[in-house]
Every structure is written in structure tokens, then in C-alpha cells.
Length: 397
Image 1: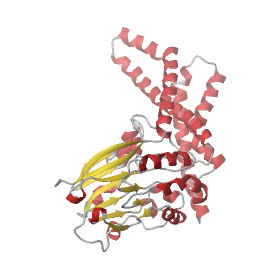
Image 2: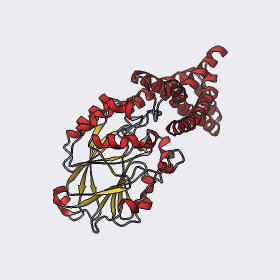
Image 3: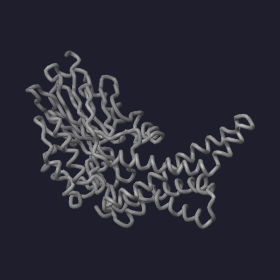
Image 4: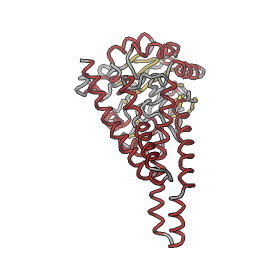
């Protein structure tokens, strides 16, 4: 069953990224490569290169395999990611240039003609390539680096006055893989522990890959410590990475998985409820597991206590707010949108939520921009990763 599920997952990803490669390389060829002062052999060579670069995941997973990611050496992942990022940037810059070319017809005849000549000239094409390489390198660096700690304060409705100032570290979307490997995980753990948080909360997507492949990479997570526990829910990538074998591994690492479940926690001797939900991915035919169920998660929970809810997908906040006990929801999944323009699509597909704080009725929602991200599309521009340290404030304080 696991092999069949993996095969189905791979076919879906392969089809998606094959189409992605065709669209990306086709547009770059028509809009950028054809304008270059090269002969046909060179132009068709560049077409092949842009197709290979934009189809990076499709090609590399065919060669190296992998669940959730690619099991190639990290240096190779970095190099191919750079080429992929350059083609993506050329796609966007070509799009902007074509818009500028169309707008040139709305200007005066002399100015418009001069603008069109410059847009189609070699200097503009060379400048686009240099800019694409610079942006691709920046995007890859921002994606691959060990994130900095970002400190924020949040006022949570009905938060006990006695817990004013509780410090919570949030680590969403680590996506531990060959890309985000043991050394990277060690750096994340060290920076988190330097903040001495009272509690650590992980809203899903911790791993990409099986327990056998990721064992050395997840090992540093055992060094995460917090007086009031390390609590997590699962994200969609836990299912892709074969969830069931991972559950005892997370437990052994000291991470308590809340799968449609809750726990009464006593920071400073004052009770609160920390709850976690399953991800809707569970309901798919490839997994056939229980989906998110807030009523089950809070079954037999003591009345009158504020609920801190871990739910990987922020869009579910509008459903979760229907239970008045839920005061604070922490989510991930969006990676903050990763880069301009793409962020508009990510926001739309996540119920209008992207990153940061939102008020959803009487529920405070925090969408984490991600500690890491999926290695199939490793790029961040104007959207750095972060380790978040939240200081929770009481309205009464």
C-alpha cells in the first residue's frame, strides 16, 4: 500500500512540474531567447537549458527519488536550485518587459518607438540576465540560510493575567530534508535554545522523507527543551513522508504530537489547553486517515480555559473560530508567499491569510512564514525565513 501511495504521489508531482517546466521554458524562449543575437543552434540549446532548469524537480526525482523532496547531495540541490531560480526570474522579467513593450504604444510616437528599440536591444537583454542571476542567488540564499530570530508580542483574547509575558518559540515548516540537513537543523535548534522559551510550538511540516532517510537530520531536534513542553501538529508533508512511522520518532525526540487531541498545560501553575488538529491531506485516498476534527480534539477538555490551537493550514481559522474556546491559532503552510506576485496566489489559496497576525472574530491567528520551505521550490525574495519568539500578553495586564 505504501509503495502504491508513493507512486501515486510521484505521478501527481511529476505531472504538475512537467507542465510547470513547459510553461516556464516556453515563455522564456519566446519572450527572451528569441530576441538574443544568437544563431538557431545556440537558441535551441538555451531552450533545452531552460527546460531542464525549470523542470529540476521532475528530472531529479526521476533520477534520485525521494518523498517530499529529492535525495541528492545538498551541493547538487543548491546548484540546480540556482539555475531554476534564474529561469523563474527571467520568466518574471520577460513578463515585465512585455508589459512595458505593450505600454510603449500608449506613449508618444517618438518616445514609444525609442522605448521599444531599447526594450528589444541587447543591453536590456544582458541587463535582464544579470538581474535574474542576482535575484536567483539572493532568493536561494534567503531560502537556504539558517533563519534569524524574530521577536514579537501578541495580545490574546481572554489570556490569563498570570501568564502575561509567556514566551513561546514557533517553528513552522522546517521541511527537514537533504536540503535542510543536520547542520541546518543544529543551527535552528541552537538559535531557538539561546532564547530560553517557556514553550515550543510546531505547526506542522517538520520533515520531508522517510524515518530511515531522515534519522541523522532530525536527531538535533532532541536538544530542543522547554519547561512547559514541545507541542506539534502534523502538516501535509508528514503524510507525504509516511506519517505512521514518524509518530514514535517524534515522541522519542521529545515532541508531543497532538493529532485531534489536546493537553492541559500548567505554565506558572495556571492551566491552559494546547490542542492540535490533523491536516485535510489525511482524507485523501492515498492516506485514508482521520481528518481535522476540532470537536474530537477538545473532547472532555476542561471548561473555561483558553485554547491555543495548532492547525497547519491558516484558512481553517474561520471554521475554528466557531468554537469560542479557541483564542489563539498558530499555523504555517504558506511559507509567507516566498516572493512577490507568487504571494498573491498563495494568499488567495489560503483564505486570504499569508503571514503575521490576523483577527478572526474573537480568535487571534498567527501565520508563521516558515523556518524552512519545500526544497522543490527553494526561493525567498523580500520574505525571509524566521524563528519566531512570541511574547503572549494578556488584555488585562
